[in-house]
Length: 287
Image (cartoon, rainbow, N blue to C red):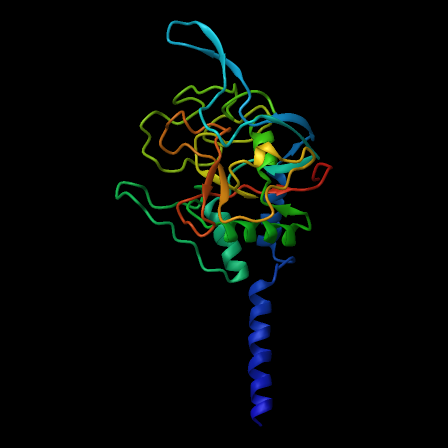
């Protein structure tokens, strides 16, 4: 009797779990979600570029032009050649509404952002999710793969930078012109530090929005300060192991220091760190 009871409990629990994890493929709401996810993908044709802090032309306060690197950072040097296969990337950062739907379908705990300042607005479904840990971000991308049948994942660091720089152009910002025009293609100086809605700022030439000037975004790679010194050229996967993960982009403070060449290392369990933008690792555009 005890064995039968234990088996019944396990069976009920298993059925409940299966129900939570169901992708609900026949559900009109799920179908609309999948259609939206697929329609907001930007195809990034593969190619080669110099990844890292490449020298560029700058102008001093007197209008004189000079050649220098974009940052004083050490861990984004030396610039090195990287060649990537084609892939597709999400046009916008993942929103609370999209992430909440993932939690609802899979049974994950609803993510509650911590408001660090009292004057910040309450989170809205159309704001990008931020302050999420690395593993839930990875789980979300993999779940997109399950419901769409496409090879979704977090981007590699190289994929993120290549796309932000519009297939590797020598620019420091993922804006429409590679520069910052405060209040037009980038948030204003001394910002109120709340995430802007997707599509607030003009896209970069590839059609990707807010890779500059909004929330920081998790990538797949472990962090290693000297990785650029021995990175493989073809589709670099990042270090095999590590203690910190990488976030790229950002700029909630409205500061010009958050350019697309900066590398930031965060603990995977850190809730201050990043948002989510996934890629599809397929060499053909998604229909």
